[in-house]
Amino acid sequence: MKPIIKKIQSNIYLIRELDYIESCNCYLIIGTKKCLLIDFGIGLDNIFNFIFPLIKNKELIKVLTHFHFDHFGGTKYFDNILANKIKIKDIGIKYLNEKDFYSNEHYLKAIGNLEIDFNKFIHVKDKETINLGDYIFEIIYTPGHDSSSISLFEKKNKMLFSGDLIYDGEIYHDLKDSNIKDYILSLQKILSLEPKIIYGGHNMAMSSSTIIKKVIQSIQKLNKHK
Picture 1 (cartoon, helix red, strand yellow):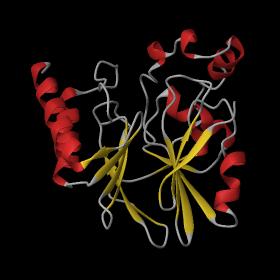
Picture 2: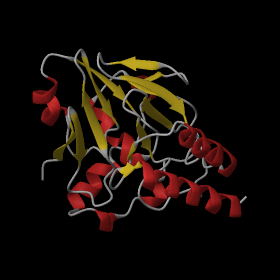
Picture 3: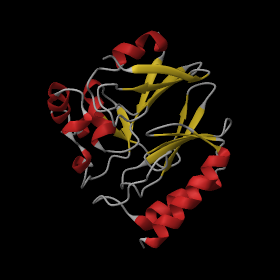
């Protein structure tokens, strides 16, 4: 099945791979001057082929929120990807389950996408900005879920694209690259930004009222594990 591409806001699209049950959320933002693709899925299809009609002749900037297999697998189809390019201990492989795929063929294809080619990536700095014309995103280092995690914040519209730092679901903090102290600091950092909406790496977007409750609950839970 081809990926689902759903318009979720004016000029913002959600992209999901339908053949993988635990698929991550990829996002395409169409700016007046440039476009931005956030995350790449597990790589069952070349999503560029599906988003090309939306991009048209604009430059496409690519950003990876963190180096877990369900987010970076699709980078095999792209080059010059912005990321927090650091040494990775754990790509979350313990969560790769054959039962989450609709066919063995898709499972084997995903396995083949698990080698990271660091030559594809360009290191992005904390507080670096990405200007699409009408949207200006700030890169925010948000380690905790893993050491490479970043989020992207659009101040004018108070939008946060958080990767797997926070989303509408259980957060994971027991990987080799996870750090509870960093996680708490990152959650407090994004809460201080007062985002109106969070587009997470999985599941549904969260509004401001849900964000406050979810982040506080997450901090409390992590404090118990310190």
